[in-house]
Image (tube, rainbow, N blue to C red; front, side):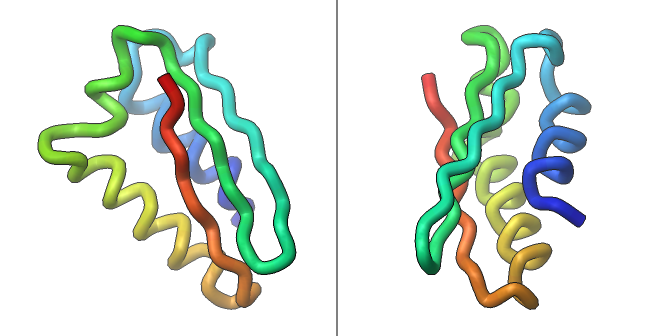
Amino acid sequence: MDPKELLEFIVKGLVDHPDDISIKTVEGEKTSIIELKVHNDDIGKVIGKEGRIAMAMRTLLSAVTSKSGKRVKLEILD
């Protein structure tokens, strides 16, 4: 499964404004950076208490991409 599609599926289930989700991928040699931008009201829902939801999403993304040998970094933008 594509990490971008997985992230979009997860985030759409969490937020109140699913139309405002923007996901951009920046490719590097060994690392891909996925930039996630959501509506201002939904940032707390995506991050979660003490960052638990964001940490869980990062764990899932690294599990999905582990076979490819490329690392994925998730950045949640304001």
